[in-house]
Image 1 (cartoon, rainbow, N blue to C red):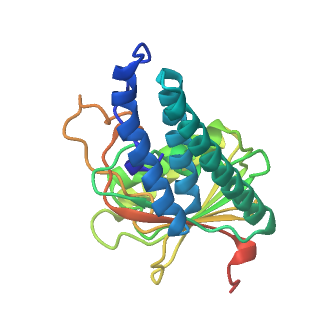
Image 2: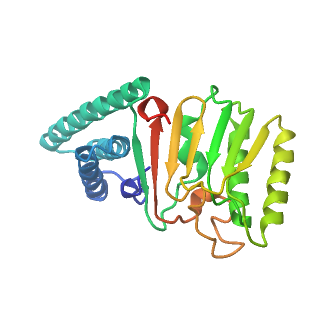
Length: 261
């Protein structure tokens, strides 16, 4: 969910005027943000905000006693649902036509952007081969990031058989650690029937991840967009949905919509 659509939980037991007072402001703010995102052609984010705002507005409607206000809310809900459905159809068509482009902006210190959340929409049973290009798989935390990404692939729903990693050599004292760490990941993947092919390039700069079902994901910081946890026993140390992020941008394309080189 886009960070700007998140809201504090509202007790489900609230009813009557108190519920309207508690629910209406966040509903209005969320739907206003949906319209802004819609106008900026950020359709995927807009759809999430529309859905969240409509849910809140439905709860406002349920708690409202005034029939005039009820009619007003019903019309608003109908209008927003119509727009949300149109956006949903537009997104589905772009995906089918291979013209889809989604951009996700991860704000500084944002949470809720684990690999599962970022990649889940593009992984299905047709994915059997993955290409990862990232020049900075060199340090311990970067090996763990890559390992966590591989774990996600192994858990499914995709049926990955081959992972290709293109990175750059650590030309310093960490070269032997880089080699041994990647070899350990390779052997571990082999136990799950997955082949890891590792190659190195001194000229690699861009970061991208490709799946053989046609989806391409480009992340400004590659897989290394999580901040260091504040301590070993802090929330977010294990669950990356709770880990604060560095600011970065995620661009999602389909290969039919990209220029092949």
